[in-house]
Image (cartoon, rainbow, N blue to C red; front, top):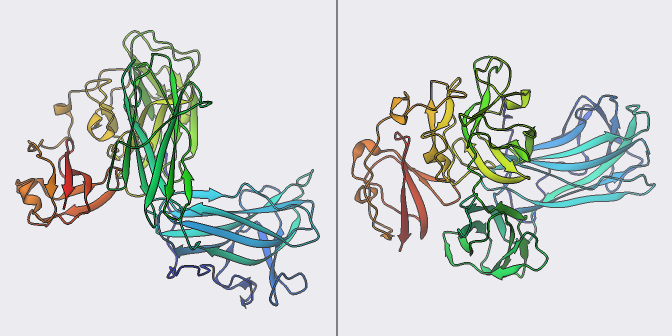
Length: 512
């Protein structure tokens, strides 16, 4: 499935407490549009000098569509900081029962947040405001005010006045939780689970708590981290009984007394033994014959299972495939095909055409993830896979496990780039596919390593360079071209991966 990116417009410097919106009160106009603003074709914008919140003018927003797909007044993109909380607000005069407005933010390169509040019919000005945190890797933002038709007959006619738009950064920032994940993803009975959280703050984290409960969170158990390194906190949940579902969430408090609480996460105890085994998500031209193959014990029921596509841009689900009333054939392979052009298919649905990378596919049991694959160079997108992502492969290549069903909870190590597609059949030995490249005999790492030494002291082989350095979140920290590059990184855990070697990486712990 093809995806397209937008083009970056002009950037402006961000200063604390500065309004990042240009011409926020619509006081200057060029022709028929306020300067620095743009609009969709589904609305008209007029200069209004009677209904004004402050100043001389406001923007009169007239919705003119009966088949609304987009009706946006927007400004962007402007420079912002990653992992930073912003408040987006505007004033609206909405005295038209046929319409309403709300606002949202598109972060770039990935992510979005939208207010859950809509304007209400009123004869007075009302302020619309919400606060959101920019994702890790964000460099710019796109501020959007969207009009909606809510007339009973959807007549495509509604009018609003908008004024005094602001996009600002609060003086103090709460902790930002970039990512939460656990390993193993689907533990067996009695197997303990490690929970990781990547957290940053403009000051210091002074308290952290993991709350977990077995089958519910009515009376959760509390625990604190067992280690913290390079902004990554590690927690521990003891092993539980088979068929239990463990729910957990995290809380962090900083030195400003500000608190951030994560979403609730969950995992199922009892290895299902069913895995995403091979995927083809892009072919030449208009995609056809794409597929996702599952692997597991023959005759296993797929009731209560669902295959889900998760957008790498904003983390939203874009495709769901309900596997109810299906089971895995005797040979262990279940093929979900985009169309009947896929051989050995067991189920045909257009939703099997998953998006190009960077993106994610999850296998869920009762809506709890038991296996996940993320693919694409991880650097600022919503990764929901396991540990580090697999490569984003070329057209008509598939990603596949070898041996079938082999799972280390690390997509980077578990999935190979295949040129020969094998839906419904065993994947070829890893040595047989064309793009594996040479394997490097990586040295045994003696940790910790002191900052200030050369990378050559860790990996001497010249043909192993360039080397990509990842943090525990899976983000790219640096690219090392020459062996005699000094290791000048903050204390913490890192992963070193030779760029021209498809498989294997080194874990290193750096101290001063």
